[in-house]
Image (cartoon, rainbow, N blue to C red; front, side, top):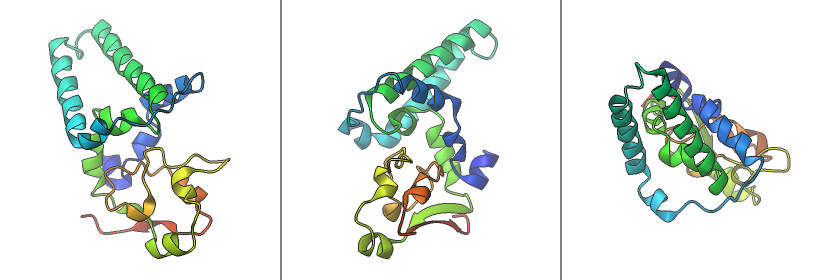
Length: 178
């Protein structure tokens, strides 16, 4: 929680579970659009995933049985890999990761934010490379357009939008925690 309070969801950018998914996607990737129901139930899916994880951890006694812990981790890694291969842009992280909502809530208090300057984005940019990416750097891994971001709850603070913006319309700001 302390890292999320200070740096937002930066942890998500180095998460080993997402990393396994990214390794698997190098073999095969379908990049289907995320189903609309995931987008409509965004918060509720995160809450449901968190509650399921809490329940399963208690039922199979993850904290006291190493075999149960290993099995549980294999299931989580398998789901992350499956969702990364099937759907575009970190669908597991955005819609099913049991930590995402929790870290997102803490991230809203972080003193740093990545935001796009709407004037620059609307007048000087036609490519939207912050969102789409370039040949050298991927676009936003969670499909955020910096000019329309209003909260730190979903931004991973990965910096891809900063690297890709040729118009300097995206910046990291220091702000009072809200």
